[in-house]
Length: 394
Image 1 (cartoon, rainbow, N blue to C red):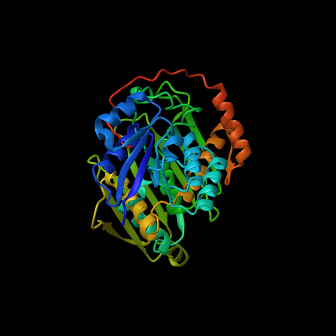
Image 2: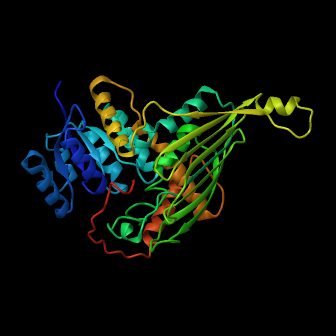
């Protein structure tokens, strides 16, 4: 079977890593045939890395129309994710897009409609969907093993970023270039997993701090409280301003409790307490006053641990298998709307200092976002730095 010819749109920090991986032969059944970037320095890098074996373009449209690719990987600033994906779908190409799917819900809905109309494979780079610990939690919830969910708490503060990171590119940490801060850049992975495990809440109350730790207009700290139809609550806390950050999930339910925590060595520990009997049964039948259900603790250790960067390769390999053999996608592109809806609701709540319901009012959100874009105060001059992509997750 002929290799799938891949074109990379955007060869910055993430795109260059994907391009190098595909060119090196890490993805069976796929070959890198073209790259695109508006920056001459990035094209010079591609020439030095790939020589004449990979075509180079300044415009994404030219790459898409070149006839050299069967699929594209879109790794450009967020607002352009939908534009280039839609253009590729209309030209009959398969698409894998970096997170987030887009900046606002109406935009993502247009992309999803174009994908459906094209009949082509559409995937998102939600590499944390390959994390076996998160997948185990999702399995326990969906199977009913935990019973009715009560409370979900995720403290995810290990996204530390320096000012130089934000100064490295003129689109970073701007309403007009990125569409937000930590929520739209680093946390789409975590927000996607939150909704994948628990579903979408019915409303959120959010408190964001803008430029608390950095000279930026957008949020670099956020605390969110969410409510579900069954009474379940969720809390989500994140920032890019705290060194030695925490990554800890705590989920309590009627039949048990799960804690997943990442250690300082970037390893995970998964502990599960099984209640006997369930909390509701114990509460209804126990007559001793003080007391609680017996709890037996188990520890989950997966057969295989997927290193962080290997998760990206696994998503691309799955994309290849979906094109060639119809294999189900790990991260179907259409599901990207869920995380964008939740991010939009969080921003709406923070901007209005009030509750925000889901699904969001798309027109209202876009109007508020455009006002942020127009009134942004920060003027930034990007400077070239040697971004160490192996040391910082995206």
